[in-house]
Image (cartoon, rainbow, N blue to C red):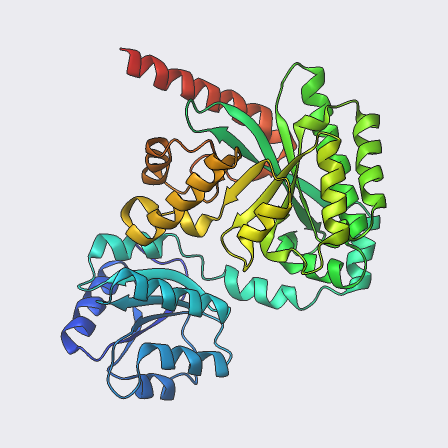
Length: 404
């Protein structure tokens, strides 16, 4: 594999044999700019010219990998990281969570001794040019620029399909807002949602997203497609009782059924004072809109939210779905979430389905719905008809093959 980038890679490991092994493997994969260091101290001394990627051993004398990560944060490291260790899964997951909390791009972790196919697969998915680019852009969007973008119609909806796990049937889509920036191209919501929430623009933004989603749903209904559309809500949208009337009016004007509209709230963002949000959500539920709790398990009061709010759908966070088939800890959390959904009469949606192993695992667990890159990436509405046709043809082909 020849690298299209002038990539600088640093390997930090106190084991000289492991250093030589990784050096040979990286060279065989086409990466030439590799520096080797037997200690965290030596690696820090070489950070005057920061590498694009660091392969880091966790268990080292004098300075372990966790302490090294803290020093990377202090120095504003903007590259990517791969953890390498012989520690158990739970330890690696804990350190992975810590690295991501520091906003360092983590590609993943590899077990010692590192196997070449695993290393090659991890690096093959790496896009080193993207992470620094997105960091630079995120600081440049101010409230006036975003306000002009909303007024100018630069926000566009992308849609990620959701399918039934039992028979692969397409059941609907989740609406995901993007900013089609005239200079920077497609900008993802993590770079502007916070600006909208902090500056009173989130209501206007959500209304734009909702109107686009309802137009799509109306078109589907006119052609006889009985699919649902999910729209993400900010807790700021739920701070005013008038939001209920706005949503109901828009749905009535579009002539669509409230039951085909799923309103998703990310549970980690739910407020401590739930009085007005609870009123808004309860009234929406009375009007027969479907309510979904997103990223389940990532917040601090998940069970209380399930107790207090009449959700119809529980979305299991991607962190508990991908690799759950081969990770006992993730599987235990996934199973607990699935059992809770069943006992409460809720549909369970698995997010972050990335590969065949994830899909097969969900089928074995009788999960209700799934979404993720294994099924489809988010796409513009214009691309949905062709994708649905291809997916249905694939689904029918699979059925005929199994019947034979």
